[in-house]
Image (cartoon, rainbow, N blue to C red):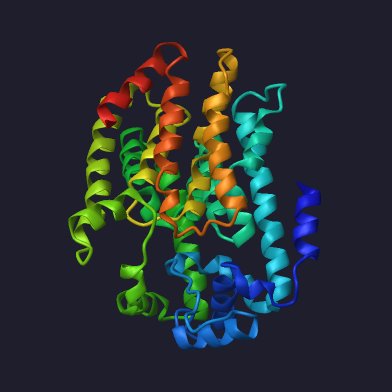
Amino acid sequence: MALTVAVMVFAMSADSAGKRDFIAYWAAGQQLVHGQNPYDRAAILRLEHTAGLEGSRPLMMRNPPVALFLALPLGFVKARTGSILWLLVLAASLVASINLLWRLHGCPANRLRLLGYLFAPVLACLMAGQIGIFLLLGVVLFLYYHQSRPFLAGAALLLCAIKPHLFLPFGIVLLVWAVSRRSYRILAGAGAALAASCALSFCFDLHAWSQYARMMSSVEEVQQDFVPTLSMALRMLVDHSALWPQFVPVTVSCVWALWYFWTRRARWKWMEQGLLLLLVSEMFSPYAWFTDEAMVLPAILAAVYRTDEAGGSLLLFGLIAGAALIEVLTGVQITSPFYLWTTPAWLAWYLFATRKKGTQAVSIGGDAAILG
């Protein structure tokens, strides 16, 4: 892993930063540090051109202002330096996430956790400089600390809030679970982290939220871009010009998530039922990219460990993960419809693998019929 990062860092040319998604966060940070609008398309485009971006369309940071704390440090460095530091932070976050997942599963003697470094969405994040690995770290920190250090677990959810639309069913159930279990320290941690993040952004840009709302409402490509999700596919089938079909799957999945939690609330475990919920949240998100699928790695590794414990074969996983990896390494763009199959495949693999694990896994596997 260290060798791979070193090669990627030192092989970068002076203008390579402008050709990766990272540049959107760097340009937003530059604007923020200099007291300017981080969502100003014209200013962002000028900055990105200086870093090597080609074309007339800027790469915009479409995350809400709660995510500006990630972009802020990049405002103090040049594009190439920022790109190197950004890559190193992403790699460190990945290493920490996989190590914590290994600990959550009891530190097994095998090296199956190394498969996490070959998970295609993770590699896509490293290659593009995307923030899916931060989503993964937020999920893993919550899973690791929600019992022992609930306030810290809640604060870690700030990393999930940088793309809140990916966690709608997961977040709704988390809120209901916290209230029903009186786990108010988790809610307090999440609230404190969100407040601190908003306060930080206000220190540099008092109008960040209004600027963000204006950018999202005025950018036509936000509505016109093809996003390889099942929600977008439904919209294409029903009415391409209408937005409402894109939100039908996530609405249905939120209702299902509440029912799923409520019927299992007495035995609810985030490392079991919660992982299925995570997969469903990603699969039915109204807006997601392939790189965002890095967040489901906890479910993927859990299924790998369960298969190994049961003495099963990992051939099916190898075929699915290998096909996704080939797409990434051969340069298939993340806007391609060839990525439509991946989220259903991860969910199918999880249900297939966990159905063999005792009575509770059988119960989880039985939910495949309900989801179908």
